[in-house]
Length: 135
Image 1 (cartoon, rainbow, N blue to C red):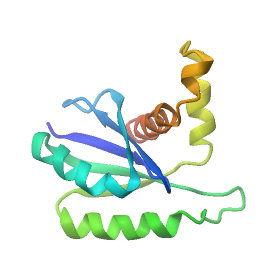
Image 2: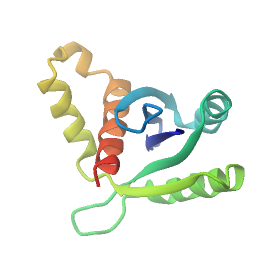
Image 3: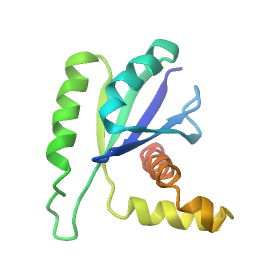
Image 4: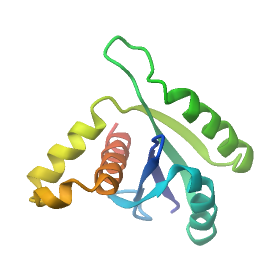
């Protein structure tokens, strides 16, 4: 079975999570510089079969989208043009960073290690993917 990946897209970095081949477990994969995201995806897709991606949708409390949304939409259009057979899903990512921090705290990650933004981003992507899997 192909994997599903999730992206916590950011202006500087994008956290990436993936499922196991049976699409049961979501785990952090990596955090990459956003400017390198399409290159990373190309390399990853050459080595792994992926059927779907989940991209966070940054929503504010009033229901409007954060400023980064327009950059995400540009990325999605480029992605769809490059990989037309892979389904793209959107999922609300409100509180994803706060929830990721709480998950790191509860899992016993040391305070010094929690300061690593890359760890936070890949954990946020994992939580997005878990939410998608259990919807």
